[in-house]
Image 1 (tube, protein in one colour):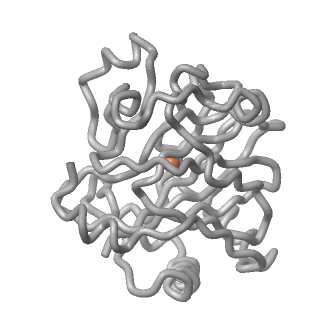
Image 2 (cartoon, protein in one colour):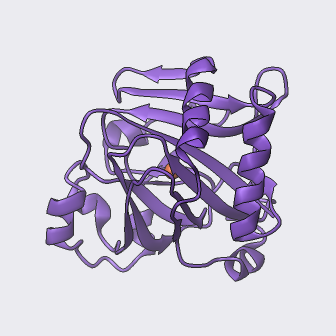
Image 3 (spheres, protein in one colour):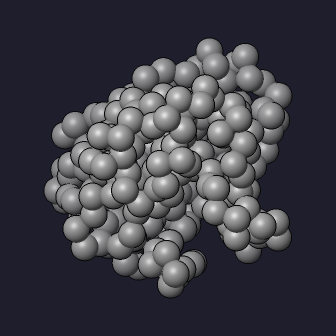
Length: 235
Ligand SMILES: [Fe+2]
């Protein structure tokens, strides 16, 4: 559990969509950056390409991003992982063809005061489901898949696997309509006790901001590939 839960809770707020924040030419710069960055992970099973936003690839975008986010959430620090050269990783570009499963991005250090995370869509088709439910441990993938739950040998920056969410929230069955409409890639049993807060339909130029304690996942509505940039902040 996070040590500063009280402080983390005080900083929590409803998820927020900021529209018309980035111009087309700014988005194009983000996409160029994405294409110029080296590939970190290509997970063939999940069909996900991940690229780390490495520092000094684009100072222009670094300060643009910082100013825009600061304008929305006030003072913050980036909660960065480090690369092999001990340089900060500013965020994560993800190109995916399949929906990403239920998880929380609460970080890897229980001493930090985790704050907000941001999602900037770089393609127009996609959606992200934010649940009302919160979790105060480390970054975790929530699953009931026995093989996934066996994975214990985690590399730096990898999420834990757990089914403990099913014990935390009231075990009310998940809304069947919502399951059919948005979450067919998840077993409905894995969603027991969860309630949707917001379904963010990706829109170019907009940014989604939400608390790092919120459970979330992609919705099952994907047409082709989607590319998004996620970053994580702390106080
Ligand atoms: Fe996430």
